[in-house]
Length: 121
Image 1 (cartoon, rainbow, N blue to C red):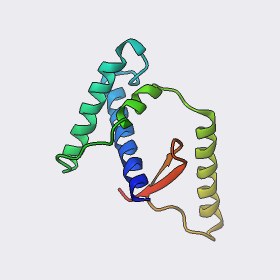
Image 2: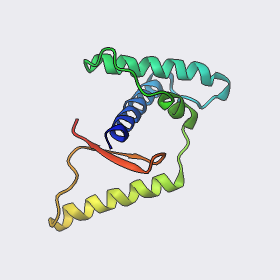
Image 3: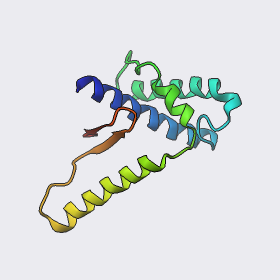
Image 4: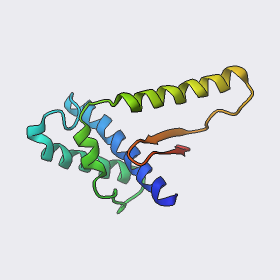
Protein backbone atom coordinates (compact mmCIF):
# COMPACT_ATOMS: atom_id res chain seq x y z
CA UNK A 1 0.00 0.00 0.00
CA UNK A 2 2.86 2.39 0.79
CA UNK A 3 4.43 1.81 -2.63
CA UNK A 4 1.05 2.52 -4.26
CA UNK A 5 0.78 5.82 -2.33
CA UNK A 6 4.31 6.73 -3.43
CA UNK A 7 3.40 6.18 -7.09
CA UNK A 8 0.11 8.07 -6.65
CA UNK A 9 1.98 11.00 -5.07
CA UNK A 10 4.47 10.93 -7.95
CA UNK A 11 1.62 11.09 -10.47
CA UNK A 12 0.17 14.03 -8.54
CA UNK A 13 3.48 15.91 -8.80
CA UNK A 14 3.79 15.03 -12.50
CA UNK A 15 0.24 16.21 -13.19
CA UNK A 16 0.91 19.50 -11.39
CA UNK A 17 4.08 19.85 -13.48
CA UNK A 18 1.95 19.25 -16.59
CA UNK A 19 -0.30 22.14 -15.50
CA UNK A 20 2.77 24.36 -15.19
CA UNK A 21 3.96 23.12 -18.61
CA UNK A 22 0.61 24.15 -20.10
CA UNK A 23 0.80 27.58 -18.45
CA UNK A 24 4.32 28.11 -19.82
CA UNK A 25 3.92 26.60 -23.32
CA UNK A 26 0.17 27.05 -24.01
CA UNK A 27 -0.10 23.38 -24.97
CA UNK A 28 -0.15 20.06 -23.15
CA UNK A 29 3.04 18.00 -22.90
CA UNK A 30 3.02 15.24 -25.49
CA UNK A 31 0.50 16.93 -27.80
CA UNK A 32 3.13 17.00 -30.54
CA UNK A 33 4.63 13.51 -30.87
CA UNK A 34 7.61 14.93 -32.78
CA UNK A 35 8.70 16.73 -29.61
CA UNK A 36 7.77 14.03 -27.09
CA UNK A 37 11.34 13.45 -25.86
CA UNK A 38 11.86 17.18 -25.34
CA UNK A 39 8.49 17.48 -23.59
CA UNK A 40 9.47 14.65 -21.22
CA UNK A 41 12.75 16.43 -20.46
CA UNK A 42 11.00 19.75 -19.75
CA UNK A 43 8.26 18.06 -17.72
CA UNK A 44 10.82 16.19 -15.60
CA UNK A 45 12.67 19.45 -15.00
CA UNK A 46 9.44 21.16 -13.92
CA UNK A 47 8.60 18.27 -11.57
CA UNK A 48 12.09 18.43 -9.99
CA UNK A 49 11.68 22.19 -9.60
CA UNK A 50 8.31 21.74 -7.88
CA UNK A 51 9.76 19.14 -5.51
CA UNK A 52 12.66 21.48 -4.74
CA UNK A 53 10.23 24.36 -4.05
CA UNK A 54 8.39 22.07 -1.61
CA UNK A 55 11.66 21.38 0.23
CA UNK A 56 12.07 17.86 -1.15
CA UNK A 57 15.60 18.26 -2.45
CA UNK A 58 17.05 15.05 -3.88
CA UNK A 59 13.67 13.29 -4.19
CA UNK A 60 13.25 11.58 -7.55
CA UNK A 61 9.98 10.48 -9.12
CA UNK A 62 9.66 6.76 -9.89
CA UNK A 63 10.79 5.74 -13.34
CA UNK A 64 8.21 6.15 -16.07
CA UNK A 65 5.80 8.49 -14.28
CA UNK A 66 6.79 11.65 -16.16
CA UNK A 67 6.96 9.74 -19.45
CA UNK A 68 3.45 8.37 -18.90
CA UNK A 69 2.00 11.82 -18.16
CA UNK A 70 3.66 13.25 -21.28
CA UNK A 71 2.46 10.31 -23.39
CA UNK A 72 -1.17 11.06 -22.44
CA UNK A 73 -0.99 14.50 -24.02
CA UNK A 74 -4.35 16.16 -23.49
CA UNK A 75 -6.26 12.90 -23.92
CA UNK A 76 -9.07 11.96 -21.59
CA UNK A 77 -10.20 8.40 -21.08
CA UNK A 78 -13.97 8.12 -20.92
CA UNK A 79 -13.85 5.43 -18.24
CA UNK A 80 -11.60 7.57 -16.03
CA UNK A 81 -13.81 10.64 -16.53
CA UNK A 82 -16.83 8.53 -15.59
CA UNK A 83 -15.17 7.25 -12.42
CA UNK A 84 -14.16 10.78 -11.39
CA UNK A 85 -17.69 12.03 -12.05
CA UNK A 86 -19.13 9.25 -9.90
CA UNK A 87 -16.70 10.07 -7.09
CA UNK A 88 -17.67 13.76 -7.26
CA UNK A 89 -21.37 12.84 -7.14
CA UNK A 90 -20.79 10.62 -4.11
CA UNK A 91 -19.07 13.49 -2.31
CA UNK A 92 -21.92 15.86 -3.23
CA UNK A 93 -24.43 13.39 -1.77
CA UNK A 94 -22.41 13.25 1.47
CA UNK A 95 -22.50 17.04 1.72
CA UNK A 96 -26.21 17.36 0.87
CA UNK A 97 -27.44 14.60 3.18
CA UNK A 98 -25.05 15.47 6.03
CA UNK A 99 -25.01 11.78 6.95
CA UNK A 100 -21.41 11.00 6.04
CA UNK A 101 -18.09 12.81 6.22
CA UNK A 102 -16.76 14.03 2.86
CA UNK A 103 -13.17 13.31 1.85
CA UNK A 104 -10.73 15.69 3.51
CA UNK A 105 -7.93 16.53 1.08
CA UNK A 106 -7.01 15.87 -2.52
CA UNK A 107 -8.13 12.56 -4.03
CA UNK A 108 -5.96 11.02 -6.72
CA UNK A 109 -7.38 8.21 -8.85
CA UNK A 110 -4.66 6.04 -10.35
CA UNK A 111 -6.46 4.18 -13.14
CA UNK A 112 -3.26 2.38 -14.13
CA UNK A 113 -3.06 0.58 -10.77
CA UNK A 114 -6.78 0.80 -9.90
CA UNK A 115 -6.08 2.66 -6.68
CA UNK A 116 -7.03 5.89 -4.98
CA UNK A 117 -5.10 7.95 -2.47
CA UNK A 118 -6.08 10.96 -0.39
CA UNK A 119 -3.46 13.59 0.35
CA UNK A 120 -3.87 16.43 2.84
CA UNK A 121 -2.08 19.28 1.12
